[in-house]
Amino acid sequence: MKIIGADDDVALGLDALLRLDPRLRTVAAVAGPLPLRLTEPGFAGLAFIIVSQMVSKASAQAIWRRIVAATGSPTADAYLALDEESLAGLGLSRAKSETLRLVAEAVRDSRLDLDAIARQEGSQAIAQLTDIRGIGLWTAEVYLMFCGGHPDIFPAGDVALRIAIGRAFGLESRPDIRSVGQMAEIWSPWRSVAARLFWAYYAATSGREAMPVAK
Image: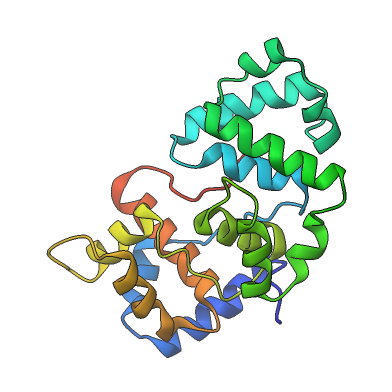
């Protein structure tokens, strides 16, 4: 598996995408430079993605700052050491707080090796991640993309990606998850770069950042 680990890898993938699907040339011209946005695999990387799900970028960053302040270093052990009062002050929903607890316990008990999972083949890694209650497909896919550097993942359930694709291709309505997944097949084996491209296109055309990793 070719790992995306540097800006040159993103550039290589984009060049391949523009040959695979010339329609993307217009999208790339609007999107501008594509960010790499990689972070180290582990509890902190996955925790930030969980925090970011279904909230604004500003809200996610505010909650993350509180987690960092409360833990000193957002490790599994540090999170589990927080008392109820500290947990309540983080601003997490009950569901996200519970998911983080389950992830932290699995890491602490060596039932979940997030470093190893990041290096595994996609479907196997996704199966292990989604076995934790509260971790859905989107969270698992984004973790593998941005903490594992997986090159061929496209989170078709991401609303911003679906909006961007509909806008870029002049569709009358936002395409559904199944349609987007099928459309993305042409962009293999660089679907993770295609996702970066459409997130950047969304940001450029809406004025709102949508890429789900930016601590």
